[in-house]
Picture: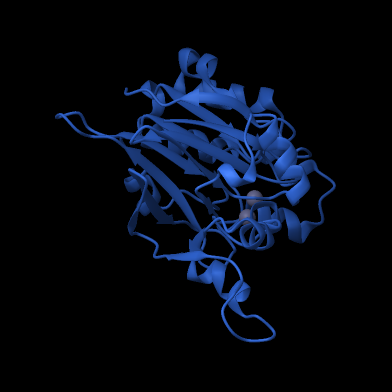
Length: 271
Ligand SMILES: [Zn+2]
Ligand SMILES: [Zn+2]
């Protein structure tokens, strides 16, 4: 199992997961915050096309994650997976009848199978309608435990439920949205600062560091910091905050996702 990002931040998010099942390549897209043309271009840079996707998973309805997913799903008949809260407005066609795209309704807390991959939808605190984040597990035969990859962006705080579910991972993509001091000093209107920094907004570098400590991420082989704010954060701030809490070797291994290029393929290795 390996994963990469096609772009990460409030201007658009999309991650790719690739695994093998019964001798065939399988791919899923996690979030789809780009136009069809832009998505096709970014997939082509990785040697893929929209038709090569087995499913599109959407975490929540904010534009930087949902993008044009329903029309892309409809045109290419790639199933769209998300919670009912995310799906509900998309299913309400003005003409009535069934929506034109294939979909699967996910129950937060439940696990789903996709070509040998187990997909767990985890409820998270964020100001959207029934937002979820995901944990992917693969393998687990011959007495080996499965490989586990967690993805956790767009959450206002690390709830006890989130900490419990995101323990014992081999790889993690985690939000480090803003630096608290940079947000405080930024030109954002007061209401937006309150929303971003609030319990239902986005995770700060410090909150992320505390979460990573709580789930024993020091020894995790691969951690990616993602969904950085362009105005209110800087990769140096992310690295130094995580260095303070998790140590030098952790901060040296840390990968930081970029808005334009995301990050390159990372192979999930057992810790
Ligand atoms: Zn977002
Ligand atoms: Zn969001």
